[in-house]
Length: 124
Image (cartoon, rainbow, N blue to C red; front, top):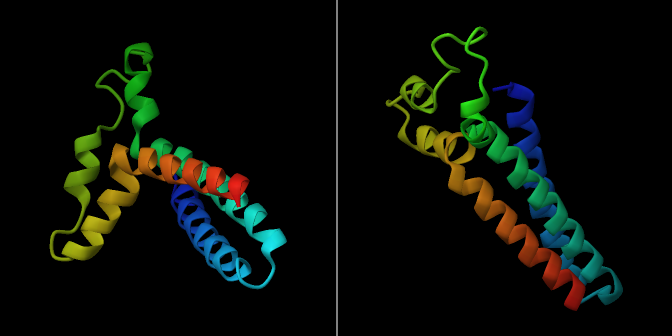
């Protein structure tokens, strides 16, 4: 798991939030741009969802049967190991970290919300 992917995920979520905010404001001020902003926000959020699925290890889990036994005699680093490493003395950060970087469902939710934003952008 690369630290750059985590930062990219956070940056993409921030960009999406900014685009949605500007899109909401533009509904009242510049209506011709609001659809484009919502569509762009949806695309960025879908990309964030895809990256989150990579960070959480879903693609590793899917390709598990194709792993090279010579390269990984004991298997790749597991999903459980990442949960154990978290600091239990910081419950909010542990929860946030688990949701952003470990849970498979978060990526799917980001993709679904991104698709909804794209559809909203098309129809506005």
